[in-house]
Image 1 (cartoon, rainbow, N blue to C red):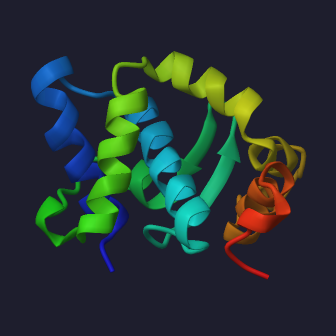
Image 2 (image 1 turned 180 degrees about the horizontal axis):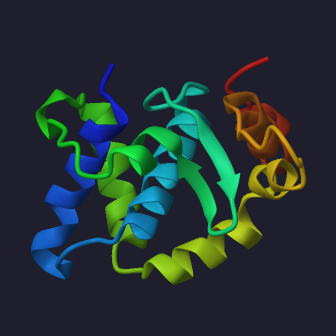
Length: 143
């Protein structure tokens, strides 16, 4: 399984030649969109890692603690690369600030986790539940 750092490297490889260096806030939000897209498509996350609901939106702890750790975009499968490509196409030109604001109004699982005073982790189950709430019953990928 590709790591968060591999996905980060793939997003940066795709976007930085066109837009320049991508800030950490934007990278976090773009990676959350990749993570959420994979869950929507397959019911499974694209990568493992703890995601927390912080003030500026979803934050992956591993990337926050080691933002300069390089990854290998070549490890992504075709399906995984398609998530990166879709997110880059749809959200790639959006600023970190706008992506953070988007996460505040578009991700009910972030809002719910943010309310918790101690354990503000955004779990895969919480993302699935949020997606199920907006997905027609016939489109559910999991039970």
